[in-house]
Amino acid sequence: MTAKILDGRALAKEIEKEVIADTEAFRETQGFPPTIAVVRVGEDPASVSYARMIKRNFERVGMGFNLHVLPEWASQEEVIDLITWLNVDDAVHGIMIQEPMPRSIDAAAVRLVLSPEKDVDGVSPINAGRLALAAPMGRPSGVQDYLVPATPLGGLEILKRSGIQIEGKHAVVVGRSNIVGKPMAFLLMQHQATVTICHSRTENLPAVCREADILCAAVGRARMIKGDWIKPGAAVIDFGVNFVDGKMCGDVDFDEAVKVAGAITPVPGGTGPMTNVMLMKNVLKAAHRQVKQ
Ligand SMILES: NC(=O)c1ccc[n+]([C@@H]2O[C@H](COP(=O)([O-])OP(=O)(O)OC[C@H]3O[C@@H](n4cnc5c(N)ncnc54)[C@H](OP(=O)(O)O)[C@@H]3O)[C@@H](O)[C@H]2O)c1
Image 1 (cartoon, rainbow, N blue to C red):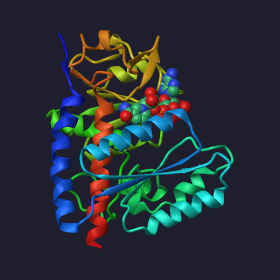
Image 2: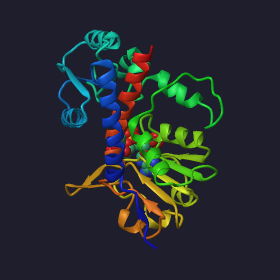
Image 3: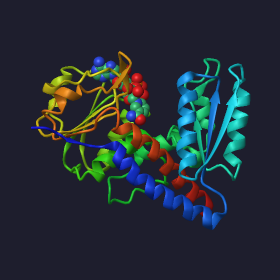
Image 4: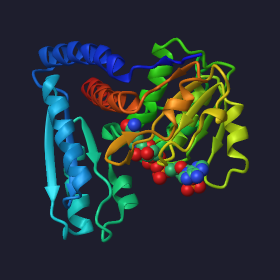
């Protein structure tokens, strides 16, 4: 058996067309584009190149992009002042605070200041809390609208747009970070999956993974998940971004897994491109909500 390849690049292109149309309509009615402000403290190289990529992506689809860079030695107060100012700037609809920040900055305190309405990276405790409180699909939850981190949102979108059944299925998420594993688990549960979350202390991880109809890997360890950890026919969503001998690979051993799984995201070309486009979607969502208010 050879798994169906879940082509994140192609799906992202499809979603990008929707983003372009929505952005054009927004610009026409409002007279300005949905805009993201990216905040960076210092010059972390990965953050510098990520910001460059966001700029390219946003400008390509006609969305606004502003970059705010504070020096490495900026004080906590200066960072908080900038966020507070962006929170009330009507020309900015989404704010992304790049991490890691210098050690002198209390990142959690900065996230706390960020307006949940503009938190397009889903890092505010308010948004994380609302996701955790949200009811399963189709049930009234009474929870205010919220934003979810783009990476798990992209993983979910791959499953949905590929017609993979989530309801009633056993999903195993390996990794429990606040930005990928945990929100992915909440999204799957909300979509009626039975969810198991694994982490570095999980005993007998291969056996737990083998139970999964949907296996999501968000670990950060190159090719850790082997072919014989996968239930035949399972859907595998690999969030991992690792480099071995200068080549990018996922957390799943793709060459082994593709022979066992029913469907699998490649790395590169799977969840990565989806993250980029879901960030745009989040900015659009935030912009629509803000102009409505
Ligand atoms: N595709 C994308 O767009 C995108 C976006 C963001 C991140 N990523 C990638 O996704 C991966 C995960 O990112 P992250 O930010 O979630 O990483 P993270 O914060 O380092 O979390 C890693 C998680 O994996 C668990 N873990 C580590 N070693 C393990 C092991 N041997 N067995 C089982 N679990 C183990 C950790 O467990 P403990 O909690 O017990 O420590 C932790 O929960 C990375 O490769 C990252 O580059 C991709």
